[in-house]
Image (cartoon, rainbow, N blue to C red; front, side, top):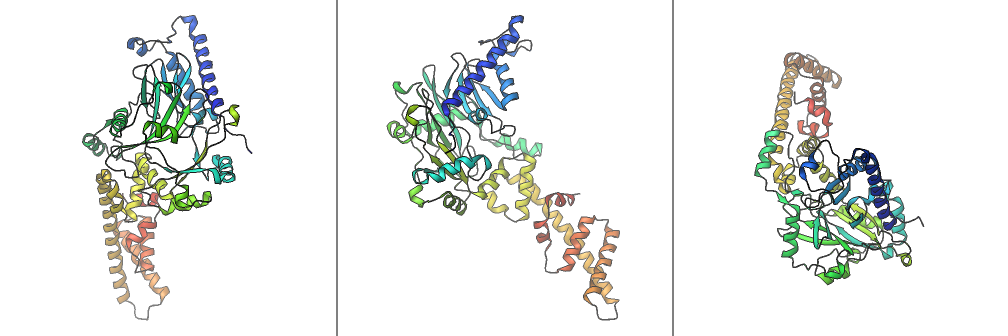
Length: 466
């Protein structure tokens, strides 16, 4: 069997790297007498002539590991969150994979929260080893719904249980708004109309509304937990009920860094938790799971997580549970449409409009209605323009046919159509792209302009806007 990833080893990697960076920092600045290890003085922290330890760590982690560093608002020089940069990260680096919301107390140089490392889709090259192990032990795996929500990290520090997002150690991230258009006025209008929420507030409100219990003293600093927040207040692909929900799906022992089964903790603290659906669907293989994922409605189900709870090897070395995710392929397409760059998102919107699927999409995501309206007007203008050109060409062809004295063969008709297209092109000054479209429409009179646009590459479609 391939060597399993050790969670305790990854924890040591992170702490050792932070120790190394701290040593470099002290060595670099000690001669100048301007090291700032611990300070709550905002003037000092904002001074361009001084670089704090946290700033130095942030630069080093970003440069060497593509890991972003954010600080806790109350403990800005003590508590940091490490989270990889999705677009720059090299996921072959186990340290980078592990930095998925790890929270570190720099004063004591210890990890106070460590979620499970990044895991991959079962058919990705990076998941090959894990998929093989899961297939080998499929009788013993657990299969869970993959929830389309926001990661919640729950940890104990300085006498309190605290909430973090995957990128902010104090849960200060704003929820509820994202750009809907590359049009600045349209985007600003949406921003003003959108209600935003502080991540930690949403979590604590849900925690209390659901009647969850705070873990007792014996769990403080010894365990940390990972939930999923499901809320309408921050729209994703899957549409959630009105009441916010919290689902436990990860438990970490901070003494050994081993993962623990979630059920005993959830039952003890009256927490909701992810339940195994393997028997419900009768899954016998990863292929079964993949088939079911694609059969379900992408607006209601993201997919599944397949988890093998690895043995603890008699405590000799703690290992992460092995996970792979299996997503609904349509969900992936929709997700890319929603959460890629604004320009790429609008390109996806154009494809939806070309396929005449706007109504279904907007039924789930009405916040994009104004962007769709603008793009739909452009589309309608193109259709009208092409139909007018087509009408002009058909009129010319009709006149040319009247001048013919012999029976018109197929070859002769094509020649007349070519003449008509060239005449219309000279008169209307339209592009080669439009001329090519007209040749296609002339060859099949039952073909509609909308049919041609549907299959047209986006880059070529955009030339029709000018």
